[in-house]
Length: 58
Image 1: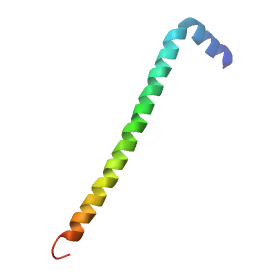
Image 2: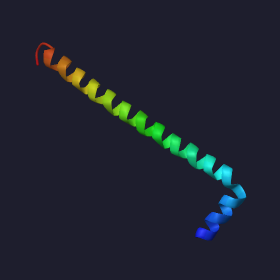
Image 3: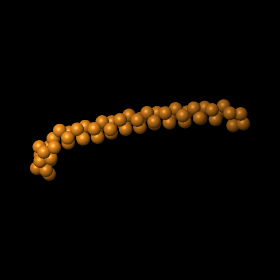
Image 4: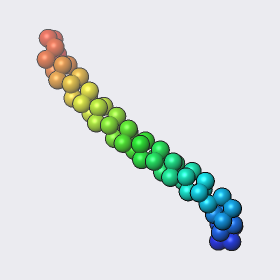
């Protein structure tokens, strides 16, 4: 396994690091986006609950 890794890095070093960096950055963006969507969902749930409680006939 380590020999294969060394071969890949020696033959394609900069490209391998670039690909892993881009994948890492993409995962981090996805985490931030997911956290933001979760927060927005919580806010919308609270707003809909407040509106439903204030509707006449509830």
